[in-house]
Amino acid sequence: MDTQAPNIVRLTDAQRIDWLRLIRSDNVGPRTFRSLVNHYGSARAALDRLPDLAKRGGASRPGRICSHDEAASEIARSERMRVALLAPGEHGYPPRLALIDDAPPLLGVRGVSDIQMRPMIGIVGSRNASGAGLKFAQTLACDLADAGFVIASGLARGIDQAAHRVTVASGTVAVLAGGHDKIYPPEHEDLLLEMIDSGSGAISEMPLGHAPRARDFPRRNRLISGVALGVVIIEAAHRSGSLITARFANEQGREVFAVP
Image (cartoon, rainbow, N blue to C red; front, side, top):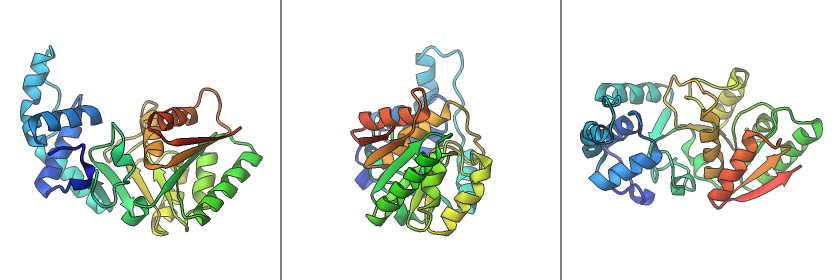
């Protein structure tokens, strides 16, 4: 199955387990996943070749390969949390995200799936924003919502939460750095539950139980820009995650807007 054609992907239950096993195995990221599936024809065939590939690559021992039971358990736990593990092209997988080079092979989507299919604008910025910055983020988010856009952001303190809070009812998507059960910062868990209950949503490429680490936030940021038509950066410092999001947006061909 060619993962470069997201509009035709429809996974069977068995394929979903194989895809999850492959992406959860050691040393397999989204690009490697795509390469392996395109080369060997299926995730199952790629899984069979992983030990040999590790040996040929000079590894002293094969990396961990996610087992069938581990993958089935993650799917069952996700279903209990009402998190759907979706492949590019399946309903509920943000269409623009499916087109980036390193799109997650399986994305955990929680909430109303239709919200993920609507056009999105990302709003991100300083965690220590000024009062004026927070007010601008809220006003802009409301105006964009009135124009029909869903607001995507990272559920962080400051600008992110300001943009989420004013668009809970109109539509907003939280892009998480950890698993759906490991919300960061913890004090925004109530905000996320309010979003889910109001018909908005959340996405993550990480497994349940994964607590976000520093290196996970840049990975998360490529998803914020990936789901969106464009990204608005508000009061970002020179060395900040928001500017990483801007760089990803440029690389992905998205519009980038800045509020100093």
